[in-house]
Length: 93
Image (tube, rainbow, N blue to C red; front, side, top):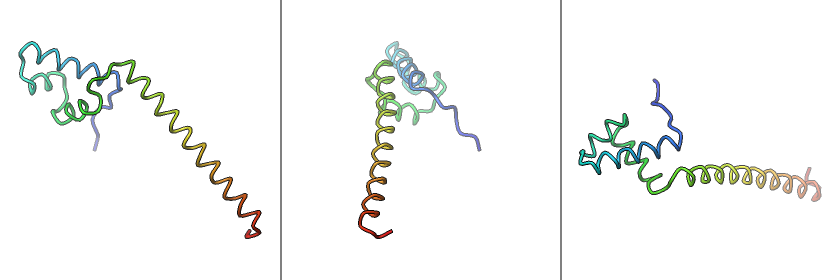
């Protein structure tokens, strides 16, 4: 079973803006959403997550998420090393 297309953050923001433009011109929201090729559920989920941010903010957010993930891994590795050293010093190896 194939899942739908995976959109990049920039593409999602552009689609959200397109829907805003269509609805500002008087087109019903449901029709504007369908004309962009996505479901209403997807639109409202994206709007909840990405609504109100621009592309630069989204890129920065992704960079920060990656950095956070890298730091979490470093902390977990150091914690494991610390536990191993404490165990070795206590003589329980």
